[in-house]
Length: 390
Image 1: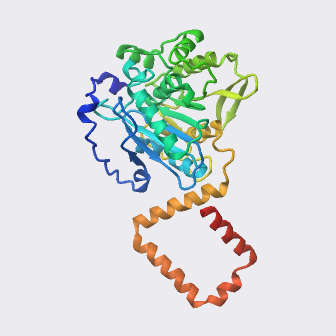
Image 2: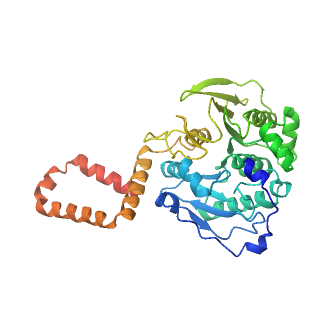
Image 3: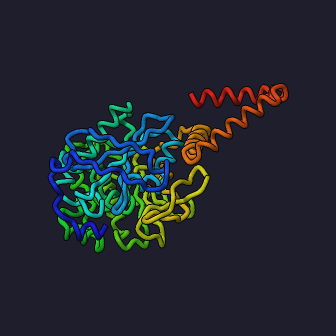
């Protein structure tokens, strides 16, 4: 985040380049990067951002907005953090805003500029318009809209939760900063490295002043590396302090527990519902915590600012939001099978055709034997598969 702040320059006016779209670069990583779809029209777009989305084959009525960090793109962060994998498993639609180099030389969202962080202005307004477009186009339940981000994206997620709180059921900030911590470049640098501390009431007043909304307020999941040298971990404490005041919660956590080997703190409301959670990963640097593998709780691919530490922030955030509760395991198994099948077909169409021909030849060579082996259990499984595939 520091490089883009130190090199920040005034953006071009939207009209000067809104007609020009730089082709999406070929990453060389196949379907993992090419499954995102760009949406060209989503309002006036005063922040001059790009809009990408992913709609899984079997979708629910939920929408997750994912904001990348500096030196990343919407596609690279989606690939690394594993959000499309989770979308396939649990059926939610993904919206991925994309910064442009013309706005910021390090491709980070301008989370500290008043012209981009006030309701109805700049990048905040552009993201709002993307969300409204996705809600209408995909029949999203307005009670099931969520937002998350890393670093500059995490700080921008806090901006969106403060300026458009009525849009979101919950959010998540990873290596982010509290809303209103900075309005200039110098203040931004100070907040990142030295942390600008305020009282809970002062932090809360900044959120309450950002819109006319008076509740209910979005729930929040906060993640930070204990050894983060880019955005100091104390910023996580300030984010929690800010939203404790907004929600009117007790400052003492209601629960301290260990999850996948790491400490989790939880603040609850009077109904004993989890409203705010905090994970601080000891020894972790600046980035998104990952747990990769084939388990349902695993997803993503390690890389720059995408750190394998044995716990998947993406999965646990989705769980905190309630997006994993009503999933059917067969849904994500078949979703994964479909994606693997598409990848294999794209990589080697000839191999796929040969496999189909071999299967047909096997059927022709022993039709009676095949029929004998098909028990009533096998027939039931086939009917189940057909119904799931719709």
